[in-house]
Length: 107
Length: 121
Image 1 (cartoon, each protein chain N blue to C red):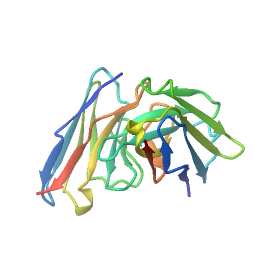
Image 2 (image 1 turned 180 degrees about the vertical axis):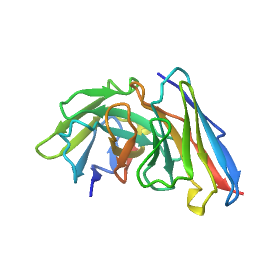
Image 3 (image 1 turned 60 degrees about the vertical axis):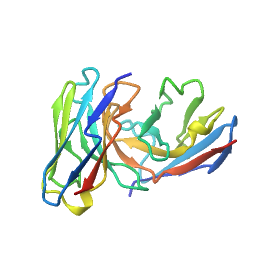
């Protein structure tokens, strides 16, 4: 199975800050990586697919980059609704696997 | 508007089989663009993919669960189902059904609200 490792596990930031979350795959997954945002008691929401494509309806302050084994999610100019947990997921091959999550908290 | 809705028992006894159904509305489960999946999340923990099914009936399962998982699709009812046998407390989780955006390499763009399943001893 492909292991997905996110860092950091948690991060504190203030409104207006820019935050970057990284995700590393244990083997080459090309561009087949997705990012999700999850708020307590809710289903995850797709933010980014194919490493850098913005899902319809997602604000442009969210951006993704990377290929191969190293990927990043950047959130610029943090808004109140951005404080949540973020997960990466590889869709290169079965079994699909998720990162352990990064909790973005307000400083 | 496309919606997915999970249904099934909220409480299952240990060693029994957990049956869940995901009803799709606003889209056809027979669409050749989409794959359909079950994903779960134990309380306070991360997301775990359980398995994926295509309208044709092709299935892909998490290896650690493969011996206990069966997924099926009913195109006439526009729903797909999950059966997880011999459940234990470790199977207590919120179970989500989800649609893959376009193809097997894509993200999950539509999710059900999730259904909490508790395994009792």
